Image (tube, rainbow, N blue to C red; front, side, top):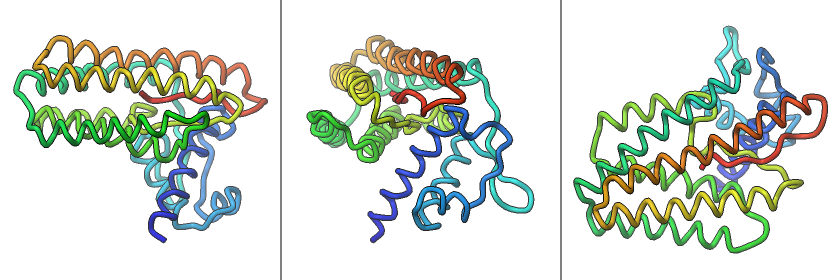
Length: 241
């Protein structure tokens, strides 16, 4: 039962993010738990979890008197937050490579990579599962750095709009584009861990920063495309790599 609720919450997250980015839910829109649950045809418990997560990610503000309000943002805000995340994750990767990591930590990284490999071996990606394992990868990268100070700064940055590594959107009409983006991002995952394994600090940092730049290029196209289609269909799927 708990797993089912979690899956529904992840689906609600993806759906609501997509509506925010496409402009279907514009800045200033008030959201209430009951109304959102009815709109998505799911129970209030997963909706409550999804709204709370979106607030943590900086996409929603808690409104006085209850409910949430969609935050306004522009493309420069999104680009800057992704760039900041790339700088910090690059530093985390360099610290991990230079300071060294344990065999147990590398085994955990390998397990995450194998799980993502399996998810990307099919034509239609299960986005809820990909989001889970991708978040596990980025969480591990921070832990591999061994820096509590760096972890605190990354937590602060990833609370900004669309900077979280788990901030995915899904759109069945662009499934091929999405799969290609995910596979590119995952090859970067593998290269980052390889650099850490071989104690190559500069390479690890460069790869992690390029990983974030890939996400930034995706979102630049996405936001410009979404702005041109405010009255139309949902925005192109993108991955926060």
